[in-house]
Image (cartoon, rainbow, N blue to C red; front, side, top):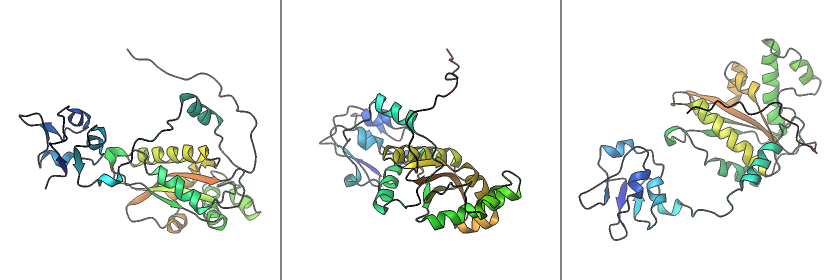
Amino acid sequence: MANITVDRTRCKRDGFCVATCPFAVLTTDAEGYPITSPESEKNCINCGHCVAVCPTAALEHAKLPPNDFLAVQPGQATPEALDALIRNRRSIRKFKRTPLPQETLDEIFQVARYAPTTKNMNHIAWHVTRTYEATRHLAGLTAAWISQVGYLPTAMDAFNAGGDLVLHGAPHVAYCVSPMEDLMPWTDGAIAATMLDLIATARGIGTCWAGIFIKAAGAHAPLQQALHLPEGTGVVGALMLGLPAERFHQTPPHIGQADVTWID
């Protein structure tokens, strides 16, 4: 049975679905109706564009139930609002210990599901600590490694003294996990983490990229064991999350101009 079916009583033969398909899964028959073949459907990445672009709802996709499609929502961010969000965003390194409400965490990760992935694979999974104590445990394992390898020799001493030079006292660390045999796991992870960063920032949640944590997750066995990673996967992105413990009143300048090479 074909994954993509067409209701010919609704189809206007406008060609929108054929034109939008990124892998030429759809063509047209002699009468101009969109069709697929068993061979072409092997290339389908289940993006749903063919269904979403049809103004008469003439297409259905067997792997994408009609009730799961959402109407295009109002509230598109204005350029000014998005520019301000990006400029005002700060890397928070001083957090309140209080965990975020579970409903808030659920909300931001439901939105983060919409981050694009290579060929729409959607293999990114998020692992999130629920408590300050769980986050601090992972910070300690990371601190031990970066002290041992000489990246930041004082990290473990600071941790033992009650500080945290790794995750900065955040109540949560969210790390995204991907099969490392995927086409572009690091790209997918960077996109997912960037999306989460902006989603959280828009809600007043503090964020900071946990780069050294990612590096330690790929090299330090005790941390790897604590992360409970499925076989064949790795950490490809990570963010600290929590309420900021300080407030910024100005946006610091970025020195220099955009470095762009224009090619004609």
